[in-house]
Structure formats: structure tokens, C-alpha cells
Image (cartoon, rainbow, N blue to C red; front, side, top):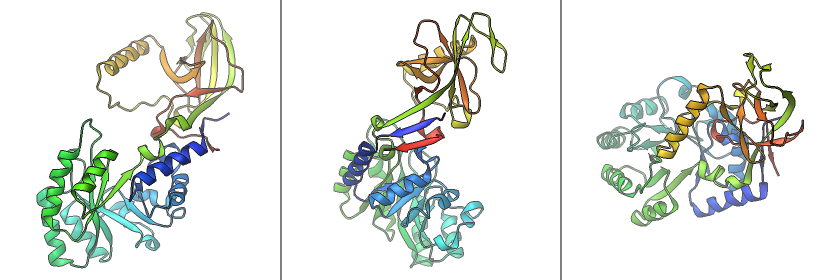
Length: 352
């Protein structure tokens, strides 16, 4: 009676080992909902991989992983002199590696904690967080003049997911890093391909390149993962029969299926898509047309075909409409669900 993520354990673990072996200095990203697996499970699996550092998204995530992973904890959200960044467990102080993206925060953090460990983030074409080239040089001068013993753990580069090679941008950014003459030879990078990482290592052999990998690590072998929902009830309806919270009527004879999985799990909640292709835009228009007449395609599949929501999903269950003709599942049967793992909370995660 659950929304369940079932994992082919042998295949998944083999994929994790392959990624770790092909990425020296790997830093697994363990953030958000734990890519559907939960933060605690991924922290334990990172320890199983034998890495020395994991990256979390926010300071609030630290308690979920710190007792399950004994190594260093890199926080990706930039440190600020307020909020959760100032409320961390003092016992974790020497394990936390902060991210700094403003010159003023360098002085502020070190005034509060002189022995703090941190990376300096250089802003990329994402324009999300980080120091400009001028700011990176300014931070270098602050460290050289005022904090010569500061524990600079490296430079962080968070690149976009755009198609095409990142090498030209990385080259420009590395020129800034070299020119800043910072007291570190470690570069933490996100979203580079294996070929790009190899080229970066070849071009900057005197630097330690550390890839931060989340999706490609945990979700890189989708064939090892299966999401299913349980059929909780089946009701036969005739055309015109009323049903549901909103008293809708059946457009034709068929069956209503009540299946586990609703808005509390993330089912039916949609984020903007990054796909800008003509095909994706056409699909968006098609969904809009279905919405207008009360039919919305659900992520639940029966015998290989996605079925329609009979009405908007509820908190923990969804109602589907199945017209006459297709096979009607039995109560207790499992049906496949297509989900966005980073936005889904599963009732159960079963790893074989």
C-alpha cells in the first residue's frame, strides 16, 4: 500500500563503484531528499565507497548525515553571517568545509572562527553564487595580508548543465585562479564529463581536481531503479456517474483506480522543465489542452501505457480513469510510476 522505490542492489552498487573508480577525488553530493533514497542512506553509502568528503546542500542537512558519515562535510550553500550557518554543532566544527562567495564573508567567518575550513567559490556562467575575478584577487589579498594561516581547502566551480563543452569556460576560470595566487592547489568542480575532467587534469597537472557528483552517481543507472504504486481500490463507473472530491462525472464507462501516491509524495507537482526542444513545447501545449477539458496524463502506467488522472491527486493517493478495453488491475497489484527522483518522497526504499 505504498509508493515504493525498488533498487537492484547488485547493479546499483556496481554502478557506484564504477563511478568512484573512474573519478579520483570523488565527492558525492548528498542533499535535498537524497535523490529519493534519503540523506541518511546516501551518507552511509558514501562511507561504504570509502570517500573522505561528501557535499551537502545546506547547513540544515548536516545533522542528517554527520552521524552516518565520519569524514569531511562540504556545504554547498555559501556561508552567511546569519541563520543556520551560525547554529551548527560545535562538535562538527573541524569537519565542516564552508563555501565562501563574497569577500566580506572571508573576513567575517575568520573573525568568528579563525581555524574555519573553507573553499572560495568562483562564479561561473550560471551567475548563481561566487566571486568575480576581481573579488577572487581581493580575497587572496585579504588572506595573504590578514590571515596567512587560513585553512583554504580549494576553489569551487559550479558549472551549468548547458549542452556543449565547458572546457573553454573552465580554462578562463582557471586563469583567474592561477593569477590570484591563492594558497591552495585543489579545485572542486561540478557537471564536467569524464573527458572534460581528464583534459582539465592534463592541463593543470599541479592541481588536485575533485569532482562533485550527485545525479550521475546516485541515479546514473536508471535501469537499476523501479518505482511502483499499489492499487488500493477499483470501482466500475458508467458514463455520467459522479465521483471524487469535486463531483466530476465519468466521460464514458470504465473503471476508477485508486492508487497509492499523491501530492505528499510529490506526485502531480510539476517544476519548470529545462527541455527547450520543439517536441517538449508541443507536449506542454498538448497537456494544456487536456487540462482544459479535465483530462491530465498521470505518471502511473498500466501495461506500458500512462493513464489519465480522473481528478487532481490527493495527499497520499491518486484516482485514475481507465476506459473499457484495457486490462483492469486487481486490488493489491503494483503499477509502474514515472517520477522525478529529486522531487519525490517514497514511503519505502527497498534495496536488494
